[in-house]
Amino acid sequence: MISTEVLIKGGHVVDPATGLDGRTDVLIKDDKIQTISNDIKPNDNTRVIDATSKYVIPGLIDCHVHLREPGLEYKETIETGSRAAAMGGYTTLICEPNTIPPIDSLEMVESFMERVYQKSVVNIYTKACITKGLLGEELTDIGRLAMDKRVRALSDDGNPVFYETLMKKACELASLSRLIISPHCEDSQFSLDKARENANVAHFPGKPFCHETDFVLREIRCTEQVRGWLHISHVSLKSTIEVIKQAKERNIAHISCEVTPHHLILDDSFRDTSGNLPKTNPPLRSREDREALQKSLSNGVIDVIATDHAPHTHDDIKKGASGFIGLENALGVILTKLVHPGILSLKEAVRKMSTNPARIFNVAGGSLAVGMPADIAIIDLNKEWKVDVEKFESKARNCPFHGWKLKGQVITTLVGGKVIVDNGRIVC
Image (cartoon, rainbow, N blue to C red; front, side, top):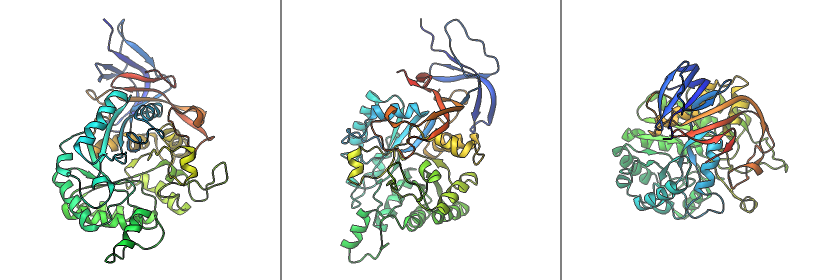
């Protein structure tokens, strides 16, 4: 009989959920963490992973990912996206619902999850649409969607719910179901076109993506009125941080937010290898905004670092598609640019990339406590490597960090006690 025991030996365990921060062994049995103790002895059938001089952390959890399947498999698939996730130390993903067709019904949730069970090497949950077809006109059946625990939040992705009365009703129904509203607070071209079509609306005139803070204020107001749950996607402005901070101080509703690695590290002075400012939504902001985002990581205003993994082909980018991939390099970027310089501790990085998203979205993981799923990443904090998109598991290559030299890399990823990445290679 083949043993289901795995022993991670001699690693430095960092787990913000339990407060553990030191050298210890981790014993896994039947896909869960069975024992954490010093000097655990393996039996004859135990697989031993030597983690000497390595750091053992809860598997990362990304609450903002586009996997493109169904409908846009030429950009990314559940299989390739999940393999990219595992390479980056991610063991759980929460996907955006802007597939084709959109995930706007329980039937679409079930269809999507059937694909996940067949193809994914990591745990996957999903968000569902706030409005039918992502069109911003009619609410989905929020109460029914909330019955499926694989649905962890509601979002219309890049199109904000333009009509305030509709958003108020969405927040009310979501609150009754204890479901998170996770909007993209951006005045996209889609929303600006709606304003032009509606003679009764004089809302946020100007260029796209200039009124993030106004939308955040509105969503906070709607959420506070029903004492609901709000998670704000990809914050990018200093002014937005301030209104979120004020809302958290009022403590009327459950307010959380996320920031991407690219908004933390890059600003509008950045140019890619072609000399261009790469396009993403929201756009890269000023140096002042970037510095404010970094500061807000340590003071608790920003809860989560999420990638907004957005795969596109070269042709898509040439035609104006926006966004970056990030699953395979996010941790390396954060370690290199924030942890090693002392801007953020490793424990806080793990908190923002694992513990907090698990808590906010109420998904399994984010901790190495006994009895928890054995979703684990082992990292070499000092391993130097170069970002090479041609070696990525993702189908896409739209990464602004291509060619960067990073310090800190995932060596091993386990999902449910199964080794998915071993010595930096996919083995499943």
